[in-house]
Amino acid sequence: MVVQDLKVLICDDSMFARKKLSMTISNLGVKEIYEAADGEEAISKYMEHKPDVVFMDIIMPKVTGIDALKQIIDSDPDAKIVMASSVGTQGHLKEAIKAGAADFLQKPISDEDTMAILENAAKGVL
Image (cartoon, rainbow, N blue to C red; front, top):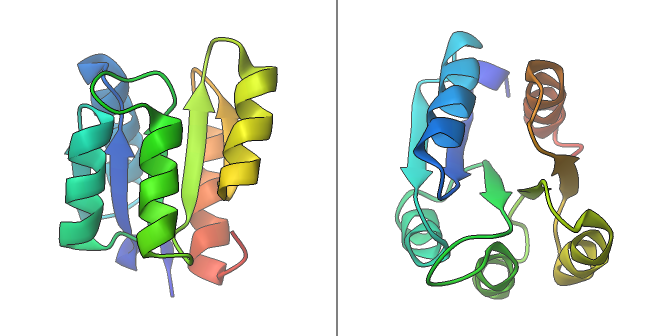
């Protein structure tokens, strides 16, 4: 698979963060990009679109990123979810990895980190 063929879901309660990440991913040639503003919407969009990669903020309203991660992994153990957070990362990191996160990024997410994640996902090594 190539990066351009990936389906990507971006979950963040910050519209600015979603748009910035979406623009970066779009500039890499990815055409199927979905967005969710909270954990509840993230779960729903995941079930609907079955993306290849999910970028998930940890701190979100309604359902947290960690709880959304757990629910998605419960329904699809092969889900590739990359958690992102800017606050209290050490405790969240351990919890996210334990819950099945494929990777963990510090916010703000750099274009280089985004590209590396997508390349690894395309190669099947995420």
